[in-house]
Image 1 (cartoon, helix red, strand yellow):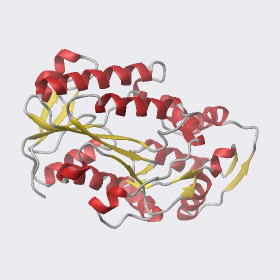
Image 2 (cartoon, helix red, strand yellow; image 1 turned 30 degrees about the vertical axis):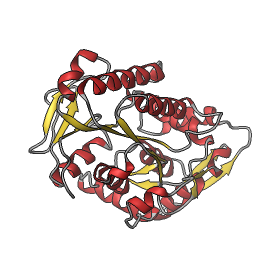
Image 3 (cartoon, rainbow, N blue to C red; image 1 turned 90 degrees about the horizontal axis):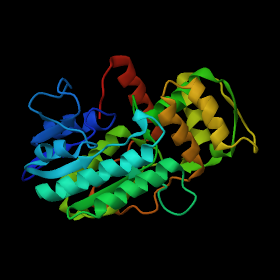
Length: 306
């Protein structure tokens, strides 16, 4: 791949997607700047760091100076559920204003599938608002919308894994039948890097998903088979996603501030509505079971592969 004409900034560089993306970009020869909130944050050799906080506007000008394209991978759920929409809104507004001042040419944002229509969960509605704010700036913003991302350390993967490992019998609400299009984390990274290279993606909004459409029940049952476990799932119509989010929060290692909004959003179907990006960035997609195997292998080896 041809390196971009200027510096590539990665916000959220220490997160589940960010740390993989920083490594992938560095491996491809891009000039990478990782935005971090702590100066002691670890980054790959040759990667520049910029200490900044999206909620602190004065810190952003230096971080964005000389940047051609910025990846926006930030969300505020990890800081606590209360007020996360307000924090996400402020962060996006601060970033867009600073990017416009710095003359940033492009932004690439990873959002979520299911962000259309009414009746959205708080989490998905906030993700859609962030995309709208980024697209309101002068920079050309590419939006990728993904469903569940399968990879070691990812919140959705860790929730599914914990449920399968710790609850051999599950009494669940109707969301177990909601359709989803899970995607391997390595495929997400390939799409992100590909969008940086492929200028025809600039300004576009694209759905990304894996090669299979599955229900959440399908995913848990297939994970259980892969783990050599028996799993019984009993759907109960009266158990709402909100109520089920409480026991999920107790069972899984994922912070409740993250797990509960994700579970409440499972009522929204998350399936690709168009596949235009497949024509621009064609590559073989990773099957669901193989994505699970890679995630489990990464856990065993301590790797963070893309």
